[in-house]
Image (cartoon, rainbow, N blue to C red; front, side, top):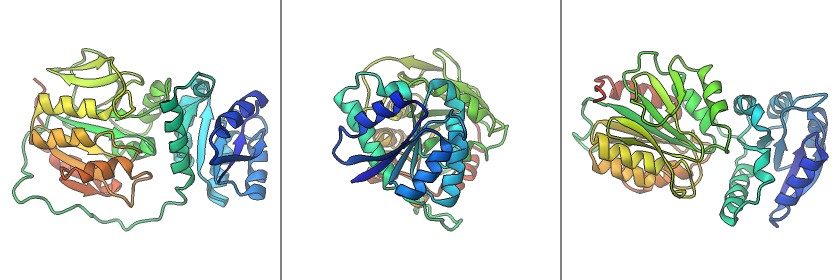
Amino acid sequence: MIKVLIVDDSSLARSILRDFLEDDAQFRVVGEARNGLEALQKTHLLNPDLITMDLEMPVMSGLEAISIIMGDMPTPIVVISVKSSAKIAYEATMKGALEFYSKDVFTLSLGREQRLHIYETLKRISGTGIKRKRLDNDHGLPLPAGRIKLRPIRAVVIAASTGGPKALMQVFSRLPANFPVPLITVQHNSSGFDKGFVQWMQGYTPLEVRLAEDHTIPRQGTIYIAPTDTHLIIQGRYLALIGGEPVQNQKPAADMLFKSAARTLGAEVVSVVLTGMGSDGAEGTVAIREAGGITIAQDEASALIYGMPKAALETGCVDMVLPLENIPSRLIALTGIGGLWN
């Protein structure tokens, strides 16, 4: 049984969340709080396994409450707030929140697969606990002899999901402003949070951060973020936004991006699979490896959720398994010979 504390100043929002959660027998709502201060008190009293946290509340904001809770009584926290708070929601991940959803997700008529995906995410998060600290060294797997050679690299493609915003920030913040190739990224986001993600990330990296647009020629030193609810691919010289059904229950899907990169760029691409649930990015990792590209996966010790990196690793097509803090320096080394986009 997963004990949940719901924190929101709206009684209607609390009622909707309670109904949604208790529709799955594994969740039990043990308490509700109307503001951050009540959340602190009830976290001490009820010792929940999971907290859902609104951000904009009277008396004490959700952001302040998250900071105090994670310092005094670390508990898995999921932010559930309005779209206008998107930038603050990403800041909440820096304070310790593990995932976030827009409130309107829970007022929609969700399909069975969507509901199951949210339930599974919340179950995984509730069992996360406190991530252990790890030694700052390189646990990269031995590379096939002679396979990884310096060659022109034209792009880095990245996949991330749960825990991804903070992981991406840690990678992008350590890359120089003159990074020689574009970084094209699929981060699984709640609908409507993509623009907030771009705005938030701009404050943490010297690189330019943009929401990907159709028919754009990627530029070096620029991070392109896939919009929500649209697949992002590389098509010839351009980025392209396309429709279609979700892949691996995701839209945008990293597999779509990775496979298009393999077709277009061949050996001149590096792929990175970061923290997240499920297996998105695994098939794309195979495609990039078969095209001669270089493949990286985050290691288990530094990943909040080891689902996506593990799935990529299990394909047998990952060249390097690296702790998060070593990925930026490896990308710098691998892209030392930049390639022109043509």
